Length: 219
Image (cartoon, rainbow, N blue to C red; front, side):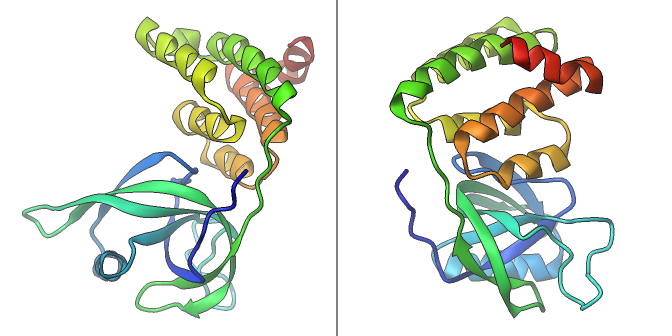
């Protein structure tokens, strides 16, 4: 997998309910003055913003820093609109996973130093078997919650997507409901291990804790 070029630091948008995966579009609403300033600064530069998930309801840790997970999604602003009430609608396109390595600033909005988070793809010979497993299992897990058109698009996407990592990330973003589970997947760089965990998590959401492992052993 080609290593993307990332900035040495970027503004951080801490959120309680969002995870930004690579190659996924994330729409967000900006209403706090400090994050309006963050958006302006990003637009004055190259549009980089990283989204990080809060660890708990407490926004700050005991040292007074943002209480967030250290693995975040780095994205670029690809669209924004200012509303009549002064708020903004913004769309981020995820670029890659990053590790947060210390604070360049905390106020008025946090800026963190960044390190690249390594991602790996399965060998080419393994990818076809993973696609077959995903086509079968994912449709089984979500069939009753989506319409036939969505299933058709999903089948086509799984068949045509060359890389497994972005495919797993997209499925997790759209079909997993638990944000902590999404964060667990964000923190796995190995795409094959990420796919295995995704199937386990989807099985748990559908069948409950006791059945997930057995179902995935049968896959």
